[in-house]
Length: 88
Image 1 (cartoon, one colour):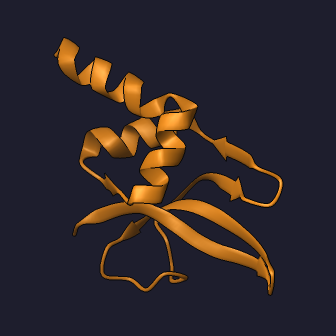
Image 2: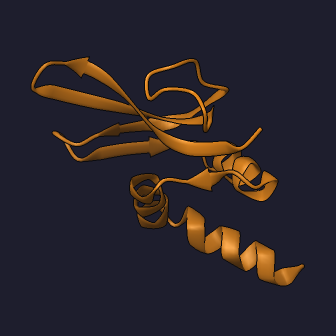
Image 3: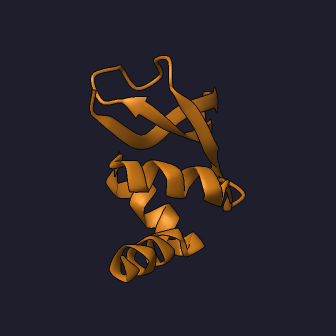
């Protein structure tokens, strides 16, 4: 099972709100996800990411989508992941 980290759309029409989730790559966009990592609100510009869970999935080999990778890098999680990877 290939796990990817990607966005699931929530909210109403013209008011998007996204959840950052770990999901099987074969499942549709708004399908059942494995675990919730955080949220992203593009209207307010707010992001909330649980760093421990994100690091767990990155170390297990989950591949983030381009947008999720940008969000995680702005939060500093990608940098911490690469540092922990280079220490080993």
